[in-house]
Length: 467
Ligand code: NAD
Ligand code: UGA
Image (cartoon, rainbow, N blue to C red):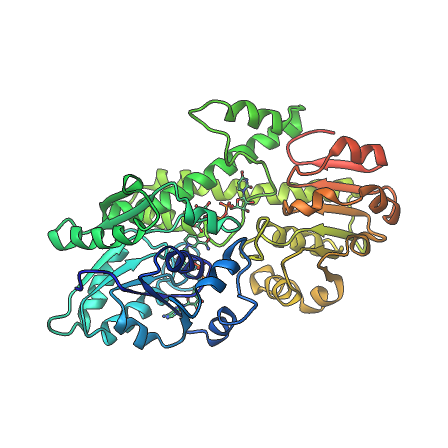
């Protein structure tokens, strides 16, 4: 293994690989960073003026480093061969087939990346699991790597989970709370940890780099996501009590969060968490518990997902009930399709499920989202698991990127699913005028000024409070 890290290859140019490597290239001008992917289309987009991921601050960094020490290509073998460190940042979706169906992560892509490395590498490498993987995945990766290993080639496998959140990826990467690196408890393992630490130390203080054994690092990632999601399900479960009792969830969140042991972050009641990871990673944890015969622990974490599903359903039931128990052919404006603000990512967005339930009730939907395009919306709604007939989606759903008045014209209700900032500054008096009466607003994100809306004549309902 070479002494100084001069070249990094990242396999997978997605939401993690792209932003992470852009920041490494930005902070480490002495290191050449190659981001590779099987998808020519994605790589072409990374090399264009219109990069494939919307993330505040990302485009500027990519434009500054691209062609200097940041390169995007499909030349996977060539870039692996040149690299001292190889990040595996491929997708690890929940299995949709076979053993572990709906629970275990599908490691097909991790395995194929590992096999390619072992086939191609002619010199020793440090391999870094950046993807979120099950506990003990590093062991499987080592076994795959050994299968084709050439004499004199050594591999060290590290776990270095990523904690960035979408929408704030660049600031999270530039100012991380901590960097976690797990490795083998051997001299070579510790040496590899130090090499990766040195990369981060270009901009991160050594004191926030936590080093552990590989399994602790892998489990910490699953546990961190499970605990973050658990906070949301906890506050959402309290929001149901608020709606029934007359308490106000925003006051309750503030009162709870003021306790420094609890903290104020991640206590926003909502339509339910979405995104590609929380549900997947909790399922991953549940599968691990089941395999370890820890049924009670598995049941505990399952409840986080059950409450999340309950919250989405509860919100839709509230809408249907207020619309006099029928949505058939009513027009409903949906504010937001992305799973959170400041991203165009729609994976597992709560909005998808709310749209599905409303379409099942016969509603017509005008969806408004600043960063989601029509093909992406159609892709999500035509997912076979939603079981929505394609003609229903085509005839009953329209997407509006920014024309809020047209999206709301003649609609019976307006439903806030994503907390985009620009939704707050719309002219709701004007929106009220163009809607059918009674005009309903359902605020699933608690971002609007409810008193004011009521003064315009709206019938307002919100998560976690009675109005
Ligand atoms: P993604 O789907 O956006 O990107 C993965 C990329 O890997 C795709 O472009 C795919 O074409 C490519 N790929 C798959 N197999 C390949 C192979 N053998 N060779 C080359 N390229 C290959 O996924 P993502 O959102 O970036 O997530 C990646 C991993 O990081 C997951 O394990 C996820 O759980 C974890 N993670 C994601 C986030 C997030 O915010 N999205 C945050 C932390 C951790
Ligand atoms: C989450 C974690 O926050 C990251 O640390 C982690 O790296 C990442 O998952 C991952 O492993 O993929 P992300 O899903 O991108 O990041 O975004 P979050 O900010 O965590 O939001 C997730 C969902 O929870 C969103 O739908 C959001 O709207 C919702 N949420 C969040 C709430 O409903 N209430 C809150 O108080 C916070």
